[in-house]
Length: 222
Image (cartoon, rainbow, N blue to C red; front, side):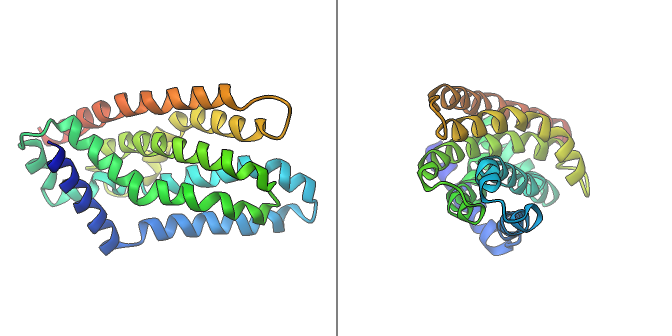
């Protein structure tokens, strides 16, 4: 099963590289946010520093959401999902592996790139390590939760808006505790409690999201 999972991850990574557009559009969105927000708020450096963690998390969240509808759609249209459903690998493992491939090719690179871009928002450099930690951890939850929206809209054309409506409420806890962990480092409070809750959310999404995605896709394949 491990070899089958690795083969599926390599396949999705190769397709993502050939198709392009997904990661590039997400990165362009983050760059636009980082450049335009300081222009909109003006030269108040203290204000920019105060809102920087929240803006960076929001940019990451929306950038990942931009690519959610592509996670299963092409495989559904070309019949690849039917082949995967008939394979020996449990379908829940298939959906988990595809969400993991999305994390490795889209969410994780964005989580690694976004904190340094926070320098455009005058972020305190002492916050970068905790931002990296929270974004890397939270980005896995973002990909897993995005797989639910991608699975529900796999058979729909132009399902991007529906994906947003389905997934954004699920993203709210990740956003709240991700920002809480990042901003706690600014004051006397510790970021550990928020990190623990964020870790719990990520673990729960790893367990629940593949099952929910597989259930939604099986309804299309019947």
